[in-house]
Image (cartoon, helix red, strand yellow):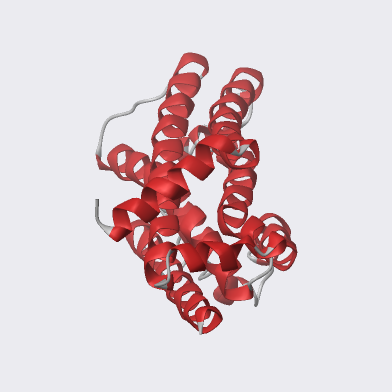
Length: 246
């Protein structure tokens, strides 16, 4: 195997042997599908906010599932920073780009798997509780975004964690930003114009079916904005890893 393949294999072994790493993706799928099904069953015929725009109802559970995705992205590299095992990993794989690339690849693949399973489960649960029409380009685009959004989020969080070089700092920054500051401030007049370009806000807009005239971009552009933030975070993490290896 090539050096990169061996590095990826080593990261896969870490994932399979550390419960703290494989539990969050599974939890993300369960929360994404389970919360959507529960809310659809309880409120689907009464709450028009989750039926007028099916994307709101289908991906309601993702609001909870992304908590586990953020934790996974941070833990995938953050644990090694906090235990100093990152230096051992860099000694085993002297080129930091290969080690970091293996972590990014693993995070992206697990994110895609969680996105595919969570999206399938959410659509299945929602369809079983709320009558909806799943045809048309909006369905195809939202389903695609539902698969890609978790992968982008995991890689983004991994990159930010590598950039900060500290698990606690990354969790302390990303958790309130994604779950508190971003959704709250995005609805404040005067701040919406800025916060609509944050990665989670832009990425989640791609999950919606209905256009929002108050946003300055379209659904696919929202996903592209999140992809840009993800690439930026990944590059920043790479630069930080290279500095650490010197």
